[in-house]
Length: 462
Image (cartoon, rainbow, N blue to C red; front, side, top):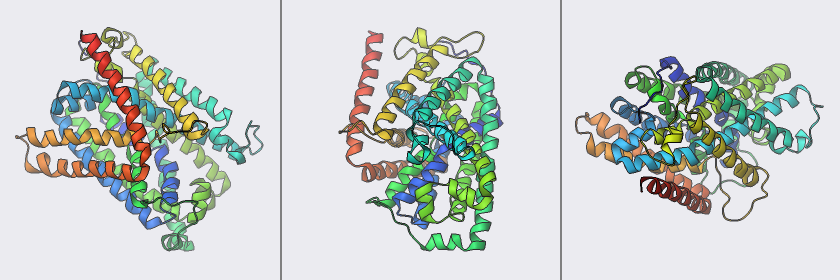
């Protein structure tokens, strides 16, 4: 099937996609999670951010090398196919289309709605809600759920009807989201040093209901969600101008920016409130302590916009997944999912599938992780385990790169990929220690979904 997607994105948009997708909700709400899992041990939390960032950079550099050699429709699927063969490429594409991208997208839509509701309540404390904000209405209330579905449909419509507008939205939200992060990094550091709060938090832990059995491993697993998303930029490599040169530049530049911003922000937050306050109330309390209620509320709005940009980038990538398979004449109904709209130059049918699967994952996330009305074995963290799975799927790709690419120099062929390989193995081990039996139940769901994909592909070929 001929690829008809036009090259419409430049280097700056690609960098904004890497930075904009990764920097978003994760740094805001996972910072609180990391503090909780480490029992308020701030230095241990910083170490977790550093280790998670180094793992990301090693993987990112290895994929940038692949991006200079392989190019087709969807970077991640291209790399899997080139290193492991067409069957593995199909499995990677099916996993991306049914679990990885839609699972993350559904969570990001909820996070965007959550911070939007928190901003509304901070501006108008008397805002009528079915469940009061003090009882978690901004998190699990029907208003938050309705807003989540609105964001999901709205971003789907933007990406399908006007992909160029979606690219501009990604660029603008990336610039906007850097404002609260930069202000907190600088303001928190100055405020924390002047008040002694930063030193206090570095030396004092907090009271939590339960500290993780392996706090460092658990914290690093949480950073995986915050750092994840850079690989999504490869999903539009066939739409990036001069992608063999610009995509690696975007990945490397974006990765360095992301790691620096995360660590500085985390330290800045520690200067604005005690560890106990940050665990109990989240990072918003640090903003209001440093900048006052008015500016703190405005910065909360910027956080909501930041999350919206991340959700948009995920939807942008998610809507192209089934098209990536159809372009190879694989998966269910390639003739349907491979269609490109003449007016918008977008794979509309692929996007419809993405919206459906994203909505299904949100239903699971709400019932099992938010409302907690689903109990039993098949309850797992859909924000982290799919990400850990993709690190597991990277492992054979890195090994094959080192085995096959004889023309590359030692650094590009062995050193960096070996670091990426070790980092990926570490992520998998950390996940097992952190989530324990939840990993087993998740892997059953993963195996069933993948088996369905294999069966549908074989049926189509027969």
